[in-house]
Amino acid sequence: MRKQLLLGDEALALGALHAGLSGVYAYPGTPSTEITEYIQQSALARERNVHSDWSANEKTAMEAALGASYAGKRALVCMKHVGMNVCADAFVNSAMTGANGGLVVTACDDPSMHSSQNEQDSRFYADFAMMPCFEPATQQETYAMIQAAYEMSERRRIPILMRLTTRMAHSRAVVEVNDEARPQNEIHFPENPRQWVLLPANARVRNEQLIADYASFEDDAATMGFNQYFEGNDCSMGIITCGIAYNYLMEQFPEGCPYPVLKIQQYPLPTAMIRRLAQNWNRILVMEEGQPMVERRLVGVLPTTATISGRLDGTLPRTGELTPDSVRAAVGLEPRPELAASQVAVPRPPALCQGCGHRDFYTALNNVIAQYPTARVFSDIGCYTLGWLAPFHAFHTCVEMGASVTMSLGAALSGVHPSVAVIGDSTFTHSGMTGLLDAVNAEAPVTICISDNLTTGMTGGQDSAGTGRLEAICRGIGVKEDHVRVIVPLPKNYDEMERVIREEIEYKGVSVIIARRECIQTLKRHASQKSK
Image (cartoon, rainbow, N blue to C red):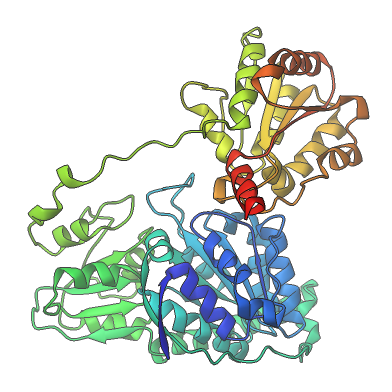
């Protein structure tokens, strides 16, 4: 054993490699990105030829990993929480097919929405799909738990969901690791190939088996050792912690927590352990990062006389991350004066980088759009979303990946003119191409602007799936060649840019404008690499 200082993301990645990983399939999204990047930079991964290229989106990542599992290999899928929505069809059905080689899906949730459009809790997906879920409290547990997840996945023939949250994913701790990596699996196919063909006759049989197997998942949650019960001397209440909430609680009691604590890190819920906690304590305080999932489930587990406290009754904040201070208040302790709010740095709002091509594109677009009082601009998810802020205020909507194209289509078909979409190159290949096909089929008067910075800029400059192919993709989908236009967003080109934008807005059909200029950050990085 040796010690390494690792992010939670890195501990998970290293644990997966040591568990005999054959491939990671992912789309970059904060706070999950570093998992795949760690594997991409790993000498062990290169030596073993572990697949680590980025996928076009989370659905294709999930499906490719499912194919690897079918072939008997151990596979990892990584995404941020909203990516679970994209891969939900494949994810939920993977519980029906089951796993052959170990299959772990990692969802990194973002409570407080540091870089996200909602606070959804991925544990609900595991519950919905009747799939086991792991939620580590420390980086050390993350390293050990991912390896246990692969063993369980193959033992129970089921995919496993691993849930991290922002603080776990992006905080560092010393982790003891074992350099003895398990060999990769040899190719071997499922013993029961019928369950991988989800025709209704097969799926009904598999559904009955999955429901029967769920009892064994509950047994594993009680016996694998990740869920732990700690006695306490103070009988005024019992505490249930989930994942990183256990760390926050123990920080308040360096000499040991006086209350009995049930530490939950593996789901389905360990109902017997919960009832044990409630035998002598009528008040149960639930601390969980994200939504009050466990808190709501307790109603059907505990006696009706039990008082349940947590996020729902205001003992803890209903929204946002748990913090040491909010946990401290929940257990009746005074705030620590050394952590007064006045000592916390004032957050600085994000902004588009100086020299960014998105800035010049938005300037030209705004100059044209100002001439059309009824114009509406629909934007998308990426660093260019910062164009909503001052000084640009360049668009009217931003909902989810790919929505810009189809929202502009719906608005155009409803009579809005001009109806303009702004989408990044990576987002376009992620989930904008199908919307463009709808627009082509509808022959709609829409202008789709692809702001192409030749990378996935929002998450740190990963490769973009469509680099060098965007014109061919748009023409192949059916956009007329004369209306696939390329502009270079630079101040010296404003007149030409505005002319092209105006011409395509006036065109009564589908047009695509590709504003192409390399991200200023990756340009600096590439220049630095060349100079070495």
